[in-house]
Image (cartoon, rainbow, N blue to C red; front, side, top):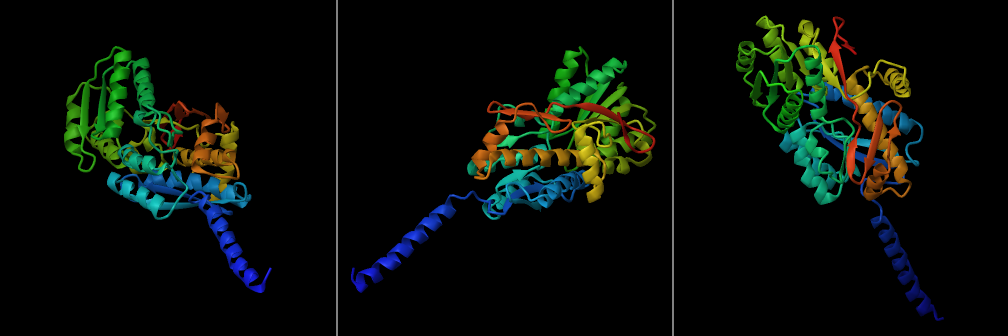
Length: 382
């Protein structure tokens, strides 16, 4: 072979190697490197739900920190990129698009709010990106099954049914419902009507309020004038607190219950002296009990990371644990499709006290629902 031929072949070989290298890189999933997995979250860091979100995210961060300290998942550490949507659905959608298209995250994790998660759905579908553990229990995310959504918490309608059953059992059959006028409130209303029909009860009052500009005095007056002895409030913490305070200021002793989206210490603190006796449904085991493996694990990590021992923090902790389990099962050649299939392989998996089940036809996760009451010490009592 002549010197000229050798000189011609060398750059050609180098070019071929370059093409192969680039081709190999193109096979790698977005958000995944040899040493990291980039996860995105859009959530209300400010606004109506900032308090519960802070606790929820602290619980998730504690678990991710522990995993990263121990070498990550197959040598990859989890990086969480969080954008504040201020609890606005339109902002949640634009944040999700930015996280996927500009930040190139591998998956989305634990957004919060029913209309907010609905706003994200088209973006997930268009980009084939999974969302793990949305913090909403709306039925629309359970049925029909959405391939890209994996729920952890039980349905809101199951929480409402539990409340109606409890009130009926203790003889409080005159039950009212107050709900926010959006898809979250509409989902709760559907559950309320179904539950009341099941127990052959008629609502004492059904009242709705605007999410952005609630008329608290109007809602309070409607309740005071109604014959209701028990009340279920479906809404975010700030408005629920204002309604409860308004009722108590008017001398109402009506028994009040709200849903698990308000199961945070910040919600109790916001209620102040009127917190005692308020019932809150829960979709996680009690965070302060160490009778389960999950409780022991949570207590240890909460102490090490300065995380509040709250139900909201426990939800974040369990959600993070689920995501990590899915990533582990997906293996070293991590892809979005592989994560989906890995999660769908989880049948009756015990996370230490919460059992989750998925399949191609079921992405509901957990059905755990419990009722608690706020005690005089400002803590949830089972």
